[in-house]
Image (tube, rainbow, N blue to C red; front, side):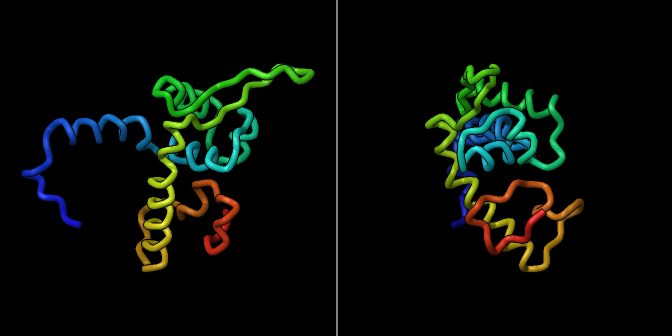
Length: 135
């Protein structure tokens, strides 16, 4: 479907740009994709997302929590730990993430190779991504 930009209001564009400013970077996408499977502790998230450092992960999680996309719960099981999960609002991003994942896979299969490492080495794999090459 082609969108006639004359029919798109400035408000619609601004809203889309606003949410993209929150979710539109590599690490935030990776966090959403990882948390789609289940809630995780900080260290589990860091291990699940290749190449992300603790400072970046912490900053992205804080930004996502402020936006209402991620919840942060403190648990006390022997030691205190923090668990992160998608909120209902964050879960609404799942179809978008699935569509992005499929487009990326289709582009990769078509031979398109954007600069940088292959996407399969950057973003986490979901358990149901059997046709996608692993890291």
